[in-house]
Length: 287
Image 1 (cartoon, helix red, strand yellow):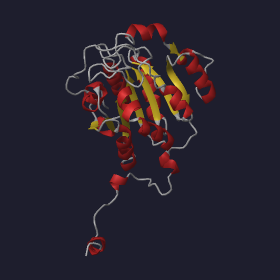
Image 2 (tube, rainbow, N blue to C red):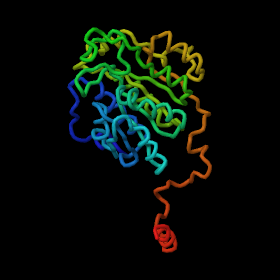
Image 3 (cartoon, helix red, strand yellow):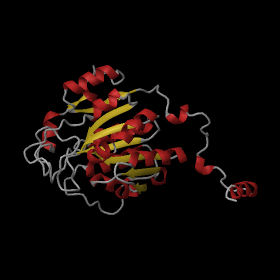
Image 4 (cartoon, helix red, strand yellow):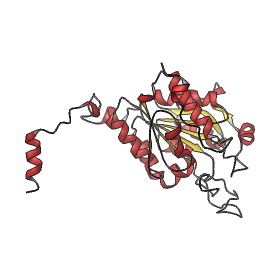
């Protein structure tokens, strides 16, 4: 059985204190707790500080293009349904150039887990306003304070009827591990947004800020994560500053379950040997 050591690679190169360390640790622990071997797991990442996740995780990894981790991860899963597939990215990667893919991934509902490290800033390019930067955020691209309204990931996912919506905090790895385990077990597209502080370029949305302001839905005995309308209301009332399982629809079938003719056996296990008669047919089309 795999241990944390099996999921460790070379030393991660994030800034000391970066929230992405907590996310990496939580992903590894979740896989170990579920008894997954590294060769059973694939991490597809985009561009940005979060893009290093595919090389630091310790399983199979694929570093895709900017904003393109989701279509790549869906292709991997559909080609080999036996794999556990993560897409990993940041708020800039996922909610900027990758926003269209996010919407359609929720709509399509392929059985993958999407983890977004949301630090409200473009960290890799040294501190520009991102799609989730709060109004008034002073950055290199908004020295007087940004006037654009931020993307609201949880409300967007709930409005799109995403089958699994959760939010974690890299300062609470124990809860984040539990959320990722639930996301992996969920059959369909799972979205886990994570507040992952950038200690270098964002001096507002810090560990101290989140510890003082976050509301833990998992600790509320009256909260029902299966009521989507109530979830929307609760998230809005808390100004998106919640953690825990926000919403899950366990009855929504995955894309694979709904797709006519989708094989029970992984596509990669099929015999793809090119028969002579097929070769002749293909050759004839070019004559």
